[in-house]
Image (cartoon, rainbow, N blue to C red; front, side, top):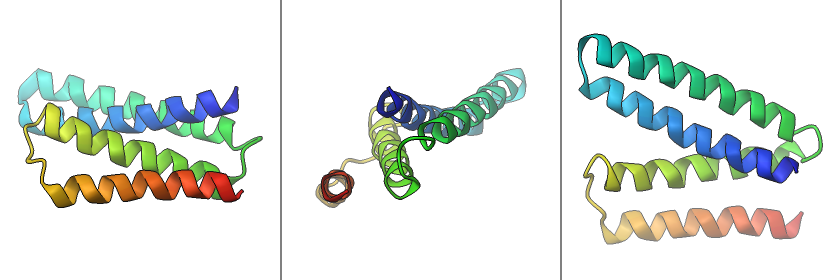
Length: 107
């Protein structure tokens, strides 16, 4: 169950990055709402990460959490914010995924 919580925490990390990006391109009340959503997603991500680390070692949970957030944020950037998807960007995202999986396997 705590692995599911950790994955949800990683998705919330992607969510708060998305909200930050949207807040930066909006103005007025729309920007304020995106920044509020950013804070909610940030707090939720931290609470879920803290809960997951009660049974998952921090040395595994934190890299998995940041890995999910990093990969998710890059994907959101490419799909939602139309950022370029270069070969090297995709290559290093794949190495990041491989590194997180490797950490889990050697634990």
